[in-house]
Image 1 (tube, rainbow, N blue to C red):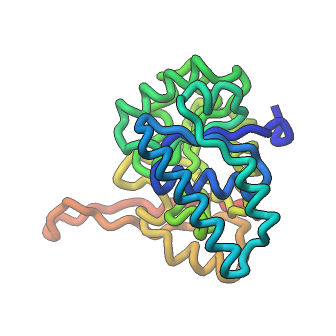
Image 2 (image 1 turned 90 degrees about the vertical axis):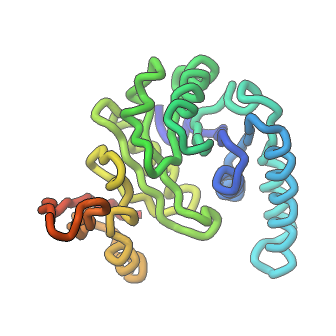
Length: 246
């Protein structure tokens, strides 16, 4: 599978993040389906999409043609099967609960085509805790968008030891094609230190964004212990992450 085989994207979870991620994908030219376990959430997401697109036209940020095309690509599906049954790439954005995510991925594994890549938008639940709920652990990884997804440019891409390089490469390139700047996290970091920004790297990457110097290896600041008393400092080794150019 290559990036050019990705034509249909499914976003699971129609909350604020899921709705925005789906919008980003649709605006970038991808047929995108959104679903949620709560029918009311799907209706709310559809109403938000219509309002947001209309506002962009009113403000002159998008043309009527662009919004009409995006709206045509965006489908609000009544079920998981309807959303993901033909998906080439899935982005899960449901509640931050490990058991719920594992159950969701187990169902996705049954429904999606064998080639489909399954990603989680989670910044706190690493993919190694979800992958074994499927029969395709090599195609499971984190693809973390920042809120609001329609504005923020960075996307963290983090695999686990069993994630294939092909899956990571496709996820990185898809991030670029939807207008984001992907940052590959090379270590499967468990909470509370998963994620660049939660680990104290926001200043570093803000500077990189401002300068557009997005290549090379960056040393992240050591995270501050959150629960240790001040009388018992803990030494944490500096960590590095490789940043790929967009």
